[in-house]
Image (cartoon, rainbow, N blue to C red; front, side, top):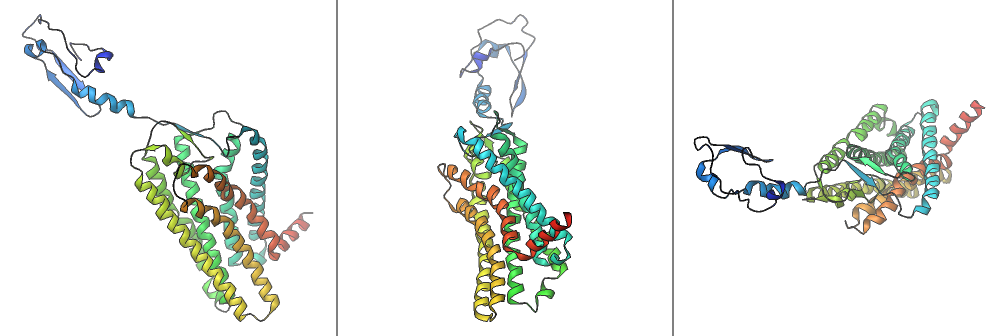
Length: 373
């Protein structure tokens, strides 16, 4: 304060007493500037106020608020497991799966583009699924592999929010894509005569644009609401990537809206999309057993649907478990293991399932390999 300096120790007391002094110039009134985060005013001190004890209530109330605020610049990702001895084994396992994912799905994209026999709606959507799987794993797996042997395991605040956004964006995109693929199979098998008119190229492009555009809004909502939270105390995330659920465990203040968006909205959408996908395959199977007379046609249709349904089951089983499971601190340990399924295992299995169980893809791949040799 101008004219009367106050020590740091005096600020921590509830009342500061200034010793009585006689001003050398009674006609000159010194000024006091009280500034805080919310108040800054200039007060003129009269000789009578100088002679009385000086009260400082405004500064005293501001100190605890400033002390309780924590500025988080980075988070520490604790990884898949706390057992350090498992890190080399897990690193090699996840590295192999990531390479299978990238090269397998990359091969599917290349074959779908180059082989004219695969220029159909089903393989058009399959190429999109392969692209989503590569991107989905790339959001989390490289950082996880780096942290296996990193001493800091740090991720910046902006990097954490960015990872959260793309994780939810690509996860929602894959869920929508699997639903559209199930509808495509339903039309192809149950309405074969109307299939060319229903699933024409214009409709396929519109569906694809919608699949990639719709997840933008919920992913953005998750990112914005999470970035508005205040984080107190520890910045250790009990996960191998930034997700909403573990970040809410570190937040202080009201998180009801975040939890509602996570559990109610996201959970409902996931269950709804899974129900629509399951309903499509249920109608397909019912139609095949009731209407199909040819055993070869029945076997071919069931084989194609089995591949799709296997991918759907592997993807949705861990997702539904996480979002239906009650939100508790003890569930975070399970979430880390379950999240490995749909971020690492599922994207690596998809190309194997579609190439090993689909004769068209396998034949196109064999032809491409023979041409290269």
